[in-house]
Length: 57
Image (cartoon, rainbow, N blue to C red):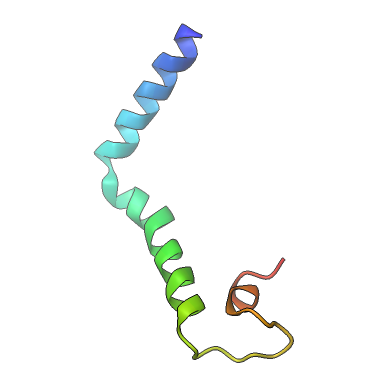
């Protein structure tokens, strides 16, 4: 269990050191999905929920 925790700690430190990468890979796509699910600018088509249009499946 110790090696796993040591690896997890090292990975988290590296990830937090490069915060802009976290923002680009997680933050911005999440903000875009939330924005387009709240705003009524997308074509309805066959999807009843806007999130179904943006992320089908």
